Image (cartoon, rainbow, N blue to C red; front, side, top):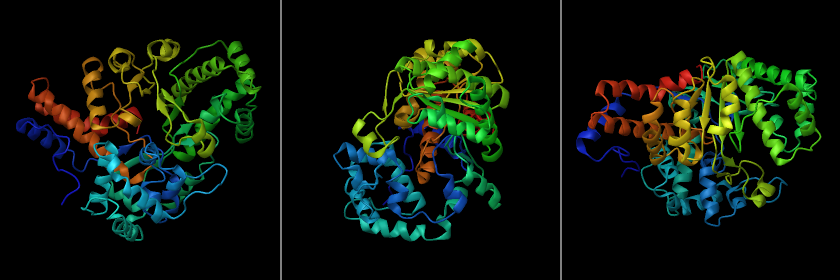
Length: 469
């Protein structure tokens, strides 16, 4: 018995399926480019064994534990840490059993497909995970994790990853990235500059974080000019010590601004005092997107804007477990008006790359594709988070290709904290793109030889180009 259908995600029409299969087969051996994600660089620095199946598949994966939480399973029963250090499940086998009892919740979801792909193609399991097979699964996976072949670096090489980007906050010392470099290992793991804690006046401890920014850089980051200089210094540090090729900005809106120096300085001073209204805080974040775009023109880093997530929607979960705990919810997002100040300033720059991500699919055809189809600086990031599925990727291609083509998009990235899901997610993306290209060929909209070129570009070349890799 197999957990995965070899023809999964391909068209059902035999002729079109044959085209999709040939396109997909042509990608065998093409390395994975993973230019944005949230894996822990410590894994590759220390190269120790992954502790147990629960810490590999359940505890770090928002897709997994939020689904169980939606059915009433307490997050503490799944080993999700509490801010106050209070009681939470620490027995990994108990966590795994709870997960296995609820595996049916993932039927028809991309998470279910990713999990089964990992279980079969990485661990060689072909019987379905359930309450009855939970202990067999646990023992089998745990035994594999004890071997050298399942250490992080060995898996990195087995997955055929050419480059993997992690994401660190602006105040991070990058010690794990330095350790990777000093280890002599050839794997290419780079960091990404994520300055939310020092650009968002509503971020907890914002003023204290600016003080730390001063200490790290030797700049007076409490003054507007010094603050910008401090960002430039940290970006350079991330490039030198972590190989950074991009910055990443997770804002609730896509708002940008282009204030005069005096107005920007006055707004910054207000933010430091904790006196910004919600509107002023959003304006400041918007100003900093434009400032970061200017810095990208100088240092060559790609600017990623992940907009539209209403983060920490559950106040109870945020208070108990902290940020980024699966309760971030998509919201309606404006891009045409929101991005205009930034685009008026730098949108026509051919040497700048701004990658736009959205959680609002309604803007694909109305806003994002027309913007990326006109402004040289803009590229469309792939479907993200809730939409990196077969249906989500297909909708993206169908809605955007007619307006901005393929070459104003940035390939695929997996955006994951769950290391073993990387090859599974890229497999889904490759299959979905090949299915879409096969439909174009079958309906006379694309020559088959062109489809082979585009398949590789969507898989590999466009991501390398967008991130300057």
